[in-house]
Image 1 (tube, helix red, strand yellow):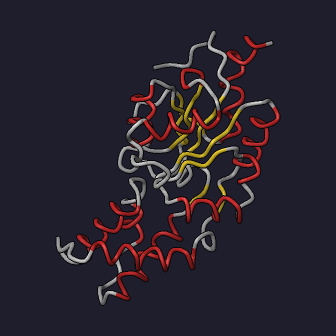
Image 2 (cartoon, one colour):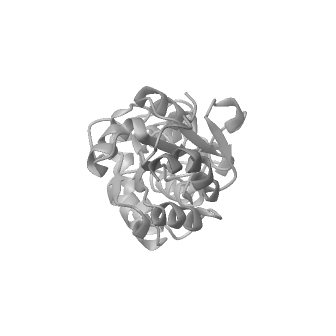
Length: 231
């Protein structure tokens, strides 16, 4: 999949963690508070941050496994503990990446429909977008619990397009991970990957996105040739 210069793209879907906001410090703090409450030793920052991107149930399970040498008993109750602690720190330690607000504002001004599609639960994603001031640029939020499936399944992307009343063939995804690439490929849409974020070993260059960008400010220019087709 590559950007088609003759395709008038009209919608931009954007991931949250690692793409719009650096939330790793919030997540790691909440996870270690969870471990402390459960009587387990804390884990290093890099260990926990490596689990980000596939939803809270996956993160909690992997944190428990790493903290107890493979023991994941009590994952369901631990998830509730994590949610409680994360609600307390959500947005307190994180930061909006440079260029995000400028890039979103430019896309909005140019008439693109914009949605955030994240695996973070809606009850955590919505307050984070509000406190960071990013909610004003978004028409739609699809959280990890908005529908029955999460990325890398393509259905959250398709659901966002339906809510935006946008053609998924004329939509692009901006993300930072293999999860985003898999979801976009399955949905048949291009994907731009930010060079920062939580791509993991090998970085974004190894993930096969259609473009690698340093900032969301670059997205309008990437879409400009196709956008001119609407003029």
